[in-house]
Length: 570
Image (cartoon, rainbow, N blue to C red; front, top):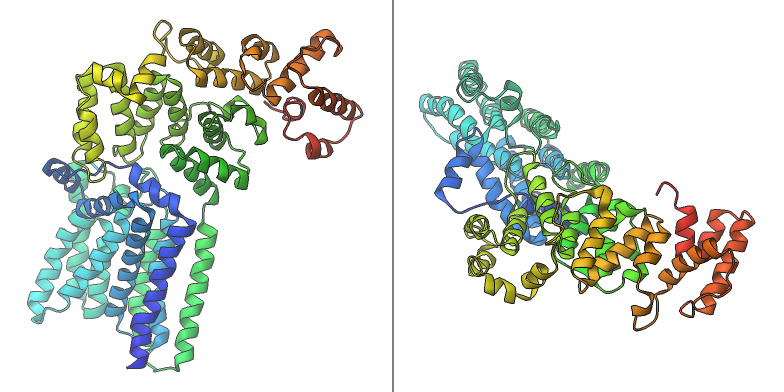
């Protein structure tokens, strides 16, 4: 009894705990990202539309579970329980009396765990695998052989429609147990017939009907991991029962440990740290956690444009725009990045435009990002932002459309109902601290089509129309500095308008332009501190002597001068 308890309780528990801790502590932002790119609604129409596609039940269940990824701990627990359940059902089907064979039952779950390291892997894949195996376990318990075979053949067609092509695991599990050719041929024929039928009636290409319509966010290609896991499932069901010898306890433990070590290696290789880092900054930006963004940036030293856009937005929102060069800067793209034709990256620039008061630019970025979601789902995050931009612009009917959809969700229902009270009530919007302010600072006279090549002009218009829009001024100054446009910076910067004195990086930029124009440091304005002049002289002396950039970085790496001369390609 002790060996059974160890095998059936401790090992699965350790596996589930390891999976939970991995997603919760090491991969939480991949969990969060799944939730924001869908719009699960509690409505009969949404249910019918989802189930109308082959594999629709698995997809609906996967989406239902994904809405709880709003909390990383809940999402991590759901993934851990799904993978642990797949292992438990695999073990029940394999019926291996040996700990060696039992250790093999973890292999399919580990392969699916590796697959889940991909941000575009959909949880419905795990649901399809689990339900296919559970159905096989249930049908195999039917006693009369003729009835069991008949139900198995009928269930093959039903499961393909409900779960998609991974329902082939139902066929495999059933045949491994029955070992009869006739039911196998009939089930294979029904499975193939379903593919042909849905191709003819629904028009789906054969490759999508074979690989799964909703298992992966992208439809033009799909990783092989789910099918590698399916093949491993078949091999485990065939070979695990072969291990009949009751080996010693340490041998079973060693086998389990070896499988876990190999699995950990696979997860390590599949871990996408670069994407996790980006998703972290995206998540913190979405939640307006500006101080947390700066704290993370001090640890990570990010250098990618979209991550820096989050950091620079946080600097401005916390009143630290003058500390721009405390962090690595990679040019204007690190302030307001160029638009990219995908569904993830435009969201941080969209937030920056929204906070600036460039409402139409924010709306455009958000809408296009949503329309580029590869599996054509709607985004709860995009719906929230589109509702807000339309409320601010006074498009109440459009805003109402988005809010009505959000009212059918679990976690956004309360927010949507509160915003619904603003629809058709411009006075209430004007009185709202956030929306009213954004209405007051948005462009009116110069609200032309977005033109990135004229970004400096667009920011200038924001400041010109709304002098109280201090964020727009800080972005304008930052843009000219990062663009190395010293003349523009000197023209726009209100040097006498800083109550606590001109920030040091602004002094550094002014001094660099002053020295270039006057060819000396005579008659430097009083707002330039003597310490800044001395540091500038030292920097120029070291720079002129040909000192390596690495040497200068140690003393001057956080100055505008170092950025101006040594950040090439900007």
